[in-house]
Image 1 (tube, rainbow, N blue to C red):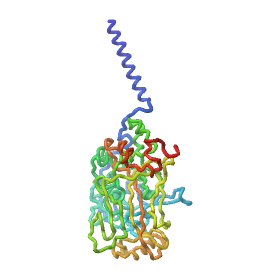
Image 2 (cartoon, rainbow, N blue to C red):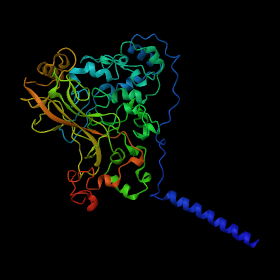
Image 3 (cartoon, one colour):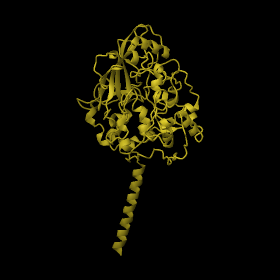
Length: 479
């Protein structure tokens, strides 16, 4: 009996020890707990089957929209408040301009297809609307909103010039298929921006339709859809791209779902989080499967004698350089950027950065971030020293006439730019954050990938004396 009593006492003490230890561990600020990947993902109701709700017949896309609005009365109005509709954000105060700046696809240029202003009929194939063929498009008409481009699940919906449904699309079948947006809906435009698969971003291409986890762990292993991270409220989709935006409002962050000091079991890694973005280690390469465009030289376009290859040369567009599985460039970045605006002057003897990053080694919120850097040779006015927007498609466009003089005159008129009649080609760059194609943790960068003689970081260019592992500190002033 006495031995039984001791055993009971020891058992009670052991149980108490386990409980107290567990409570202390849970209370510890340094405890490591695996994040639940679905914890921050919205739980959506089962989609409504529209097979018997959409009756038709539908002659136009607008007919479908009107039918949608009989139940979803406010949805078109919500869409019309977003940049998917306006292609231009509301003005924001910026430190690098005296007046508020409003930017977007509608009023900026890039170094891919250059600008939408004279080419809107072709570019608006990716607009969430119907009928944007010229400056007279009525942005106030709810029936012009395209519901199908984001909600079709039939896989048969295609748009053509002006954003109209392509000839032959069965609008009734598409309307009956509608559901939540998938990667196919989003990727139809975002994977093919700039004129083809993977051209623009370096981390968005058609390999993400049905990826393996070694292409993107979220979309592959977990089958995330774009809207799981880019969540929407009143049709306003979260996310920002510095190709068109200058602020970081409504942005998506890894830390929206992942708690940094909980997910890393090694304090040495956690110590990096003040200055190193998650993507730097977890997206070690871009364009993993499909190549992305790294250079576009418009100055060689128009040569009828050259053999064409879509990844090397096209007469209508010039020379290209494509790469896949490329190592990003790394820069300090505080989440915002400056922007070349239409009519800004350039120095043609220097490289013009169209979206210069903001933040440096001394900026408290800046972090080292991976980028694709896209180079181009594009037309500029040699008298006014401004970049020009050529008319490419349509009557008088370069792709029809191969006449730069006419194309630049028409484009300047559409974009509201002066044109002296004298042109040449200047070198520009655009920077594209690499933030998709997140790898499984086993593929993340290791210490020697950055901290070694052949590491991928140019420490001096980043503002350090050298590899900070050898002397420590965030910057040369010790801050």
